[in-house]
Figure 1: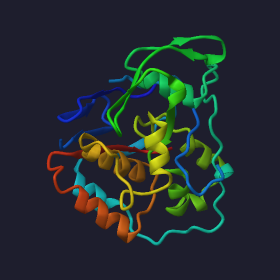
Figure 2 (figure 1 turned 180 degrees about the horizontal axis):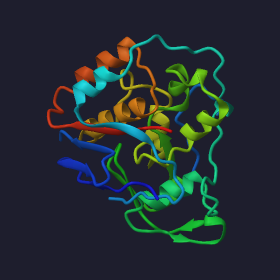
Figure 3 (figure 1 turned 135 degrees about the vertical axis):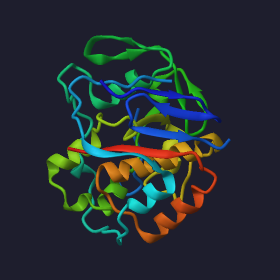
Length: 242
């Protein structure tokens, strides 16, 4: 099962299994414009990560991301197979995230069909009571991951990335509107509209890049450092992906 996270919008956010920590200042996934196209998170059978780092101040964590030019050639969304039933329990990754992030648990039917339930999209502070109105966002979008190093991965590693249930903010349930507004953009070009989401999002983005050994281009790093200015109490914990 996925790690546990408690959210208090506008104040602080903590994890109980040391994935991410931040304090904030104030049914189709579409995280990728290059294609044609709180809660407890625990997923049985999720892969574990290797040793990581704990409690890095956000600016130091941002500076730990290697800086390199993006490699854009050859990207295809199909290079990242998703969604899969990782632990053979009948629920694909999308449903696992919805179950884990529900504020009010949905009913689970045959083949993991979900009815009812409620969710809070932290990008825009919108409450959602219909799972079909939620997208599962890859925190670092698939195209951005490709540009930042995944172009050199095996198909198996790209599948593991696209279905990463081993870290609680690799994937997040948010409103379709906010996810599609984000598309494949990094924080230099897009940030969540809710002010309360700023520091949490920067921590989540940074931890995901560090977990998977992804690069940042110079404009991205500069933007991350500038945006992180008010996040004086935010720290980053991460486990290295298998």
